[in-house]
Length: 91
View 1 (tube, rainbow, N blue to C red):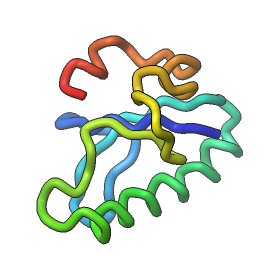
View 2 (cartoon, one colour):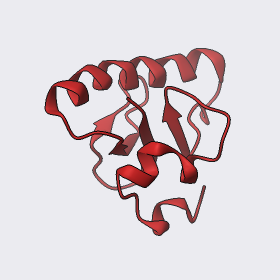
View 3 (cartoon, rainbow, N blue to C red):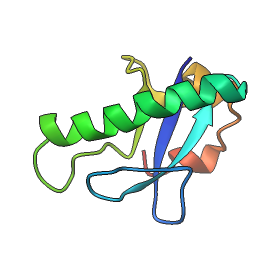
View 4 (cartoon, one colour):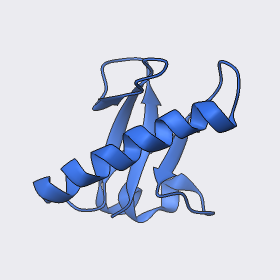
């Protein structure tokens, strides 16, 4: 399952355990069991970004888990998760 993560200055669906940054998430599928399993992958990816991207800008404004080479706005998670166009204005 693919998940689109979009940094948010407001309350989010998930929070980085390292820096506290909030993220809105858009799911490719809506099965609660799959979302719970993907949650662990998201938290792991957020922590890994701090390891590979040193400094205060560890996170991209918008990214997919698992990663892919295309634009986040055209990901399955964005399209199937009904991510609003406004989610990509700063991406």
